[in-house]
Image (cartoon, rainbow, N blue to C red; front, top):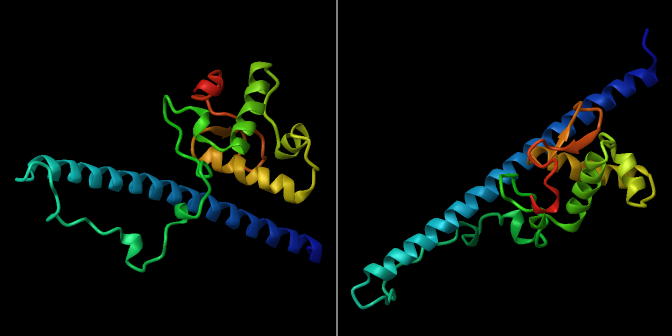
Length: 180
């Protein structure tokens, strides 16, 4: 017969896995939202440029209608509006520099880049906390884990054994340093 503590640990582990899965899904959806918003903004700019070129009175677009911002129509505002600059983690693509990331994310990449350069292998979040001179307490470690998981989802880091919490630079990022 399993112990009460054992059952509690099983339920806690199941809940933790569900929370991690939902966080990853939320991060993926937020990344898709950011890409869709950028695409929408590009189309709005393109339409305005075409309107300006095709306007019969040499570029005056006083009689054209602007496409309303769906966020201004009383709907829920996008989380990006309240986010600090560089607090969003973009999906990694070729030629995208680390400078698009906030300092916290850049520090994580730099620490793992240094480990990679010295062939020292992956780091856990507890080890990252120690490297950064933070108290190795659950709150600090979980904050780093959240950031590291976000970097994994966006393609900046790799988690060698998912669930084990050992992180390295993603293959496309390794060896490129801050100028990736």
